[in-house]
Length: 246
Image (cartoon, rainbow, N blue to C red):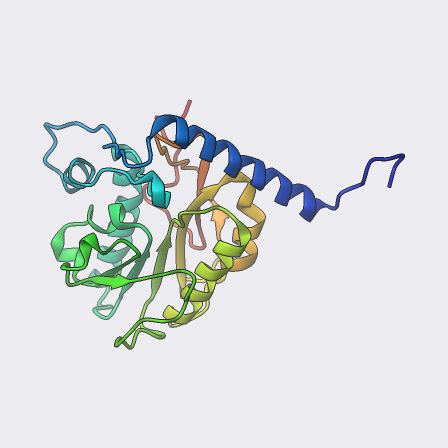
């Protein structure tokens, strides 16, 4: 104690800062949406690409913290995934598989030919008729009824509905269950790509070996800024800044 003021540790300061960010986000979300109202992220209706189709057909749901990236951001993140998948398949790795955890906008932005080697793990059952859908509740990180998914994937793509450490720890547990090899920075096995707030950088490196890339995603209806993180180099799309972010 200094006088009557408690001296906080770095971990306590980070926890307090993330709690403030979460509270700010919730207040702004409440202002933007009524309890039952849903909002569609605006996109170019003349563009018949997969990202535009997804955004127009899937309104956001603030009651489950379901917010979408902008179309240019989807294009960049999905483009990075597509480039990596195509490279692996072209090199003869026909067993290469990607798990999209709570990132349906990126999964559905891929062309069907690439989606064949991907699965989308999500809590929202609206997509359960898609053959790549896996019901996923992060509170049960390694429970997948009737499916043998352990050590079946080469890459995970993650965007949790919450930014807190306890939630990211569960996603990291899921990732290590699904991946053939544990993700490590600079290791081209156990690939990780994800997005979360700038303040989570050290935590993401600790949990999944991910380091910030040059690309910052745009999520129109969230008030704080995200970074994208990867544990591999030779980026094709995320190696430059996002023109949407001033």
